[in-house]
Image (cartoon, rainbow, N blue to C red):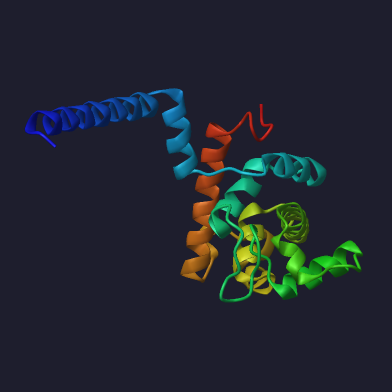
Length: 193
């Protein structure tokens, strides 16, 4: 290959690289880029299921989304404690939900299904809200740290500062902060308009 031909190829490669860079800059500066940045910082998937369950149980859809973000980042996974799916439901909690809901066909592997997992998680959240008189802080503390602990820390009168476990306190604060962001950023998608 001659030096002239190599030079042309190098210039062509540089031009292509500059064009690709320009396209990336334009995309990131547009609404598309904002949507990508938003999705990375505050993911949202399965909003149709979230809206449906929020409406069914009269719970703020943004709260459900915030719990899913905190529990799994909207990625199906199984924790070291055996919690499964988007809302990280443990086998014991799944059995409780099965009993409370009158179900009889539950199989733990079913929790990998986003629809079932969100239905179960929202059902359980609703149960906790009922148990703690609608106190979202107590329900979230119970979701993370266990209902017995939430009851011992103050039950229906529980405030964030009453939560004895630092991890659970941080969990509740994070979920409430994310909820506000979901309400602001995804109001239309979550049917909050």
